Picture (tube, rainbow, N blue to C red):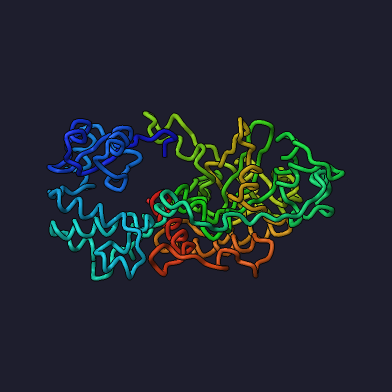
Length: 457
């Protein structure tokens, strides 16, 4: 969406003035600029209602459009007449109530959230593509693609839809408590928006990012529990994700996603004909896709983060604790040594490639900025190890383990809430426009499809 989109008007006015300032699209249908449309109205040749105003255009290079049309099959050619086009344009802008719309022969689905599906279905039927409309007998708006289109239209084309996007607490705490001992500070009472706006005596202040972010290393965040997931249309991999913050300074925040196991294994040579394979987890887009497009894939080695939450390994000095969490980060050499000695097994170690990054430049304020805006929520510190332990039961990703892994991920995400019995995503559920499908159900399905495309090959 551009701040300065191309604006044009389509009309069927055939006066001398209108034709002189317009270009012909089809016989009897013309396009003109907004300024020219105003001049036509001012001349008395037309009324504002005689125009259809369009904001923005679709554009391709000729070769790209040819490939999409003829090689990829993304488009169908429809030969239509001016009467059909004008009829559909008239129906789509009707504003009557449903019962009146039927009498006026208007499209009862003229709501922008319908995204013009009626017109698409009508044209498909006219060119003999009934199966694309009705599939196996069920209406196409029950299909995943149509549901996503409804949601896109709700987000991009509808300006009066109100829904709850955040679940941030309104509690205020002392910013100094971020530096307190774990026993003195319960993250259940932590509201980052308050930390950034109040001083220790309650006076409003403007806190620098470095001050407001102290203590974030070792904190776990979970993706938003808002009724309409902010990750439904973009970055679906973050939907109901769990991220451990491993770095936070004045320049950026960095975390690793814990809940996505991939179909890849990391081979560790223990020596003496012994080895161990660790399932690789997807930590985020940074670094994970770095090797794609490289001329020589062997020239780039994806960084791997090794984590454990074993008290035995901790007592043995394996790894360094991450902040005040009960999770430690260790090296590959430490992992090999611990497994060889019998202190650890493959199930004790998480191997993660890729990470999630938040900049602190300009208006961006790191992970705290996303927490404040409701994109993420803080997991209470006492629940972090429980969540981690739940995720440890996930297996290498396959077609057979996909559903179990996803169910375990959801279980851990629910456990990371302030109150496990308070699953906000299922309260006051909202449906995709024109259907009885819950938006959260659609977001869950979009997340699973993202996993299949990106992590299961």
